Amino acid sequence: MRYTPDLSRISEAVAESFGVREVYGEPIERDGVIVVPAARVWSGGGAGGGGGTEPGALTEPDPTEGRTDDPAGSGAPEPHVLAEGGGGGVGFGRRAGPVGAFVVDDHGVRWVPAVNVNRIVLGGQVAFVLAAALVGWAVARRRR
Image (spheres, rainbow, N blue to C red):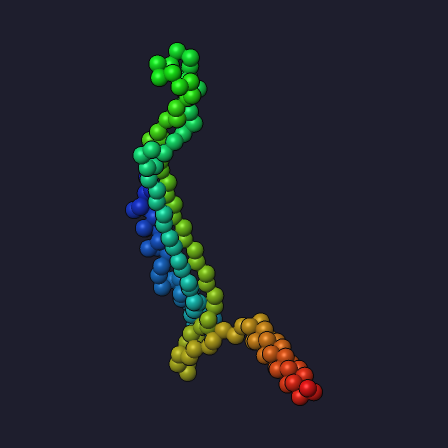
């Protein structure tokens, strides 16, 4: 039995997943201020296929072959050639993260970036470790 993917359904789903609504969220209004959240969206996809086997690919030997009344007289069962195959697959992944928001109020439109405190703290820790390693290296080199 051969599987044939429904490519039109797959392409419709992919087309629906790419759009402005994936980057800009629904506007939120409160006290005369409109906030439009924005995100960075990464997407990727892939597909694979398959087919039949090459001529000469072998399967299990037929146990009825190789009987003593075999005219060839070899006595060993002969393997059969495999004649079927198939395959296929589609994969899709997405990652999104906030980057900020557009704020619309009486003063106009302004961009308010999203601040990732965890990233800032991690960057400070990495910088501290590198500075400590550099100082340690310099002190050890000076003692020689």
